[in-house]
Image (tube, rainbow, N blue to C red; front, top):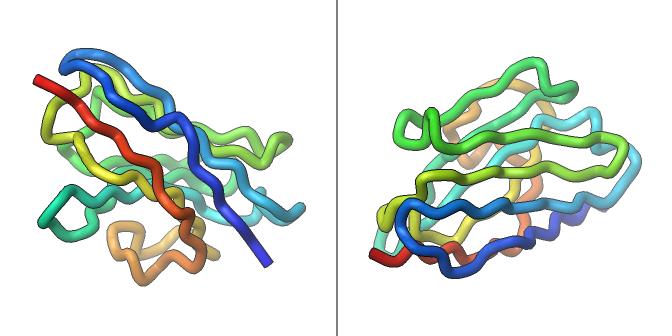
Length: 124
């Protein structure tokens, strides 16, 4: 059984930075594609970023390219999302996710494991 627990969310002013962390249970963490989705009030869940098992492949949604950085530390069973130059439209609940393969990354149905989410609020 796998559990994902996000942390690091909070309130930040536009232009500021925040780093989200996701701690995963289990010794098979390194075998999973990991990523982040987000959901703003009244909107559908949106893919944000994904990173492959060893970190060799990374993919971002266009709206965060150049501002967000996803990374992972398999020794610590942790995935991170460094968010810089934050905008009010980044306000959302951010979910850590895990998938068994590097495929269909934009689709929420590709991910088997989901965290409970952490709130990120960017004020203007």
